[in-house]
Image (cartoon, rainbow, N blue to C red; front, side, top):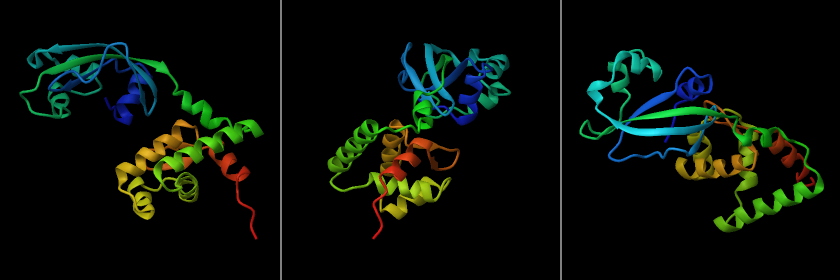
Length: 195
């Protein structure tokens, strides 16, 4: 389940406590916790509703001005059931604290390097350092542009960057990415010596 940046921020500040979706079957489970652009969001409940019962007040509680605006945000065929999903903000994404932690001692550096080497090996060619360097060189560059320069489709490139973000090495921006303090330290400490 994906939240827009605006909705994720509204959930984080408490002004949105529910969202609506039109799905062929429920795509979220009560009790699950999801990552969003503003941190971790818990799915408190998922319930099918009659869309005719949604009011303007319900729409405002979901961050939309009117019921008509809310319905425009629905994807999928009108024949699909409509669900109301109650949500609450759990807290910051733990990757944020990891990204800010640039105190890489020798053991942490060795562990991180070994992890990145395994990631390179599984893909059949080294990509982790090149991706980090591309992001460091052009913060905010669109993922599609970076993907094209890397010879990858955008979906594959984004999946790779997510893996690096899970290690605290990159930070997602509204457009593109930037290297995190942890990622910058890693690049600096592992910079190959120049001849």
